[in-house]
Length: 298
Image (cartoon, rainbow, N blue to C red):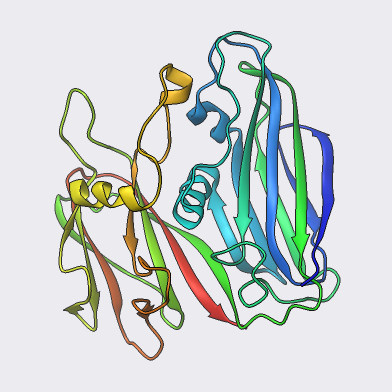
């Protein structure tokens, strides 16, 4: 299978803006987005770097294919690739070059001709990147964006990634949220506002259940603590030695995984279902962010 890796945006000086561009017409494996700049402070934390890329959206004639805040895309990268996105700042001192790269995925694996975004007509598929000018922590900041095409690929499925912002329910305990139906759900990423730390043992979400047709399915109840433990299957849990290295996402995320063995045998099939819900056992009455990863038939 041939591939074409090409530059969509090269050395673009970062600004507070929404940058948009039509994507190539061949089948797309993924998009690579990289931000780099010279640190103005001794330590640029990962949380600071991620925040300069506010949101990434891919739409086809106005219909969402992917729409995620950068923090959620970072977490999705961790889940899909079993590694953290590359953040090169590993030294202490101002003026050092720092880079952060995020992958915009159209399949669970890269370079997979069977699972990628299918070929489109010119102008149908659009990328939008919402950024904030990093005034106080980076100078000479630039964006580089590259697309990876798979010419001739005829995929059976592609990955759709969408965000659901759940407002504070007004109470603690169970909060049921209806999920969209029709596609197979691979994973639901839960990003909390409050996460247990040094001085407290509080979670924004104490635990998660899934209900299909109002009956528990797969996840009868999974606590936040044990879902954190599941990350042994995702990535190295050892952090660095300085603050910038140690400030590692996804510290405030857990994953409701329906493809733990990467063999499609446990996917959450929602086609024909009248109701699929995620039940969040709220430990704090506050906002929660969900990232829904679905497989869409091409």
